[in-house]
Each structure stands twice: as C-alpha cells, then as structure tokens.
Length: 412
Image 1 (spheres, rainbow, N blue to C red):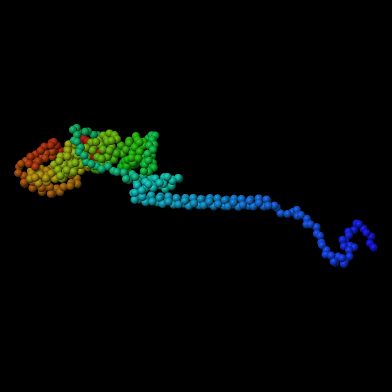
Image 2 (cartoon, rainbow, N blue to C red):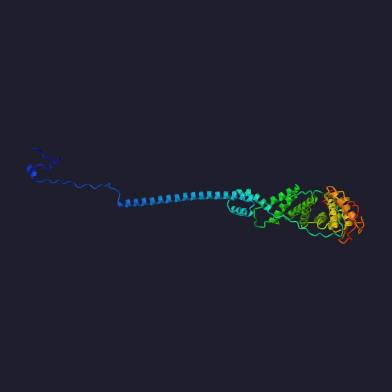
C-alpha cells in the first residue's frame, strides 16, 4: 500500500471502479481559451487609414492633371511660337517681292504689322532702307511748262561765274524736333541728310535734290536751316549744269525752284536767255520771222554769238533759210532773196542747211525779183510783210560786237 503524499498529484480516476467508468460517459471540461492580447487594429484605425489613402489618391490625380496641363500649355505655346515665326518669315519673304514689284502700298501694310511684334523681326532692319529708296523713286518730278518771259528794259551786266560750284557740306548741330507724326516708313533722316551731303561733295546734284526732297516731304522742320541751305546750293548747281549742257527747259524749271530759297543772281539772266532761245527754236517753222528776230536778239543784241558753243548761229542760219522759203511762198521774191543771202553769209559749224540748195533758191529768187524791195537792202532786224512792205524792228549791227556778258550756258 502506497503512502499518501499530499505533495504528489492525484489522478482523478484513482479509486474509481473501472466498470463504472465505462458505464458513465466521461465529459471533458477544458479551460476557457485565454483572450488574445495581440489582436489586430480596431475599426477607427482602419477608417483613418482608408481616408488617408483616398486623400493621397486624390492628390496624385490632381498632381498628374496639373502636370499634364502645364505640359500641354508648353507644347501649345511652342507650336504657336513656331507658327508665328513661320508666318513672320513668310511676310519677310513677301516684302522682298513687293519691293521688286514696286508695290509700296502692300509693303507699307506688311511693315506696319511686323512693327507690332515684340521683338521686331530682324528682316525689318534689312528691308526698311530698301523701302526708303522705293519711296524716293515714287516722288513726282517737275514738269516744265513754257511761260512767256517779259523782255527786260535794261540789259543786265554779269561777270563770268565759276563753272564749278564747290560745296563743303558740313553737318550743323541743330536740335531736331520730334513732330510725332507717323510716316510710311521709319526713315533715318540723319542718314538721309548725310547721304545728300555726300552726293553734293561728289557733284551728284540731282541725286542730292531727290534726297533732300524726301527729307522735306517727311519732316519739313528737320534741321530746317541746314536742309534748306543745302537744297538751295543743290538746285543752283544743278541749274548751272543743265544750262551748260544745253538742257535749257530743265534748267529753267530748277532755277524757278531755287528762286524760292534764295537770290539766284546770275541764273536769272541765264534763264532769260534760255527762254529766248527756246521760244525762237519753237517758232522756227511756224513763225520764222519771229524766230529770226529772237535768235538775232541773242546773237547780236546780247552779243552771245557763241552761245551753246555757237549753236545759236546755226539755228539762226536755219531760221533765215526758213524765212526765205516762207517769203517765196508769199510771192515776195526780193525779200526771200535777202534772207537766203543772210543764211549763206553765216559760216557755222555743223550747219543744218543744204548750202547748195539754198544757193539755188537764192538764184531763183533773184531772177524773180521785180524790184518791189531793192535787193540787198534788208538787215537782220527787218522783216517783210505779206503785202511786200518792210517792217523794221530794232536795227541790229551787221557784225556782232565782242560779248561783254558770258552766261553760264556759253563756254568761252
């Protein structure tokens, strides 16, 4: 028999009848499960996490949208800039075509539109000088209208003038006034003035006149005293050159323009002689009697037998012959004979008449002369009327005096 020891564990089945144990069902009692202290987070925590996830997703969506928008704007701006540059280049190319075609109106509109661009296209700095020249080329030129020049009562005296006018064009320091007026182009007036001064120094007087005309048309107050002084010198110098080269009508026009800017002095007399010459030349066929009178006045009364290198005497000789033909047609053979004789007496260089033909006419007129007008009694100042009578204008010397006046149009 085993000694009982309280310290040893006891089997709960100890002392039980085994048969009883088999008859009674045995119920096992398990201890309740212990509570798991390391369980997962609660609902509140999961709710906070879910809200944060939603907010984060929203931020990411918005951020992606903003980035995509900015990228689209950048691309759109880049495309717009490229399109604008392309359009500007097209306009620049077309401006050159406008210049070649002389289309100033369309060129003006293109330049005005391109000037609105910021910054201004580079092609403007290239095209504006060309556009300026195109504008200068469109300026109107003066047209000569013959006017009747009154006969002076006193013969003026004039000392010989220099054949060349030397002009030193220096820039005068004058404060310019900005009128604020808009023009077709953005002209460089200082550059145009310097160009005109250079043209004067090179004796390109007509080019200087054109340039100064442009300056005055653009801004009449721009360095006014300097421009007007240079303009007067250019006009008088060009008029002198024209009279020298026999371009009398043009010289008269330029002299008239110069007169508005100063005292033209000797050019006034030069203009008077040139007008006599042109009138005599114009009447050589339609009114040869008046033509003879005017040419004789230049050669004998004014003593300018060498005017235009002697061309005045050649014209007078032809006028004599024409007057003889007119008198022959009127049946006044004796007066015609004297006009033919005067024509043959002149020995001119480069004569325009057929001397053999005029000699034949003189012989025929002499044979037909009836004595109504004694042969050889006409002087260059006398004319014969249709009825055969003689009209005396002003007696002219039979031999020309030594000229005391040498106008610019006559070379010595």
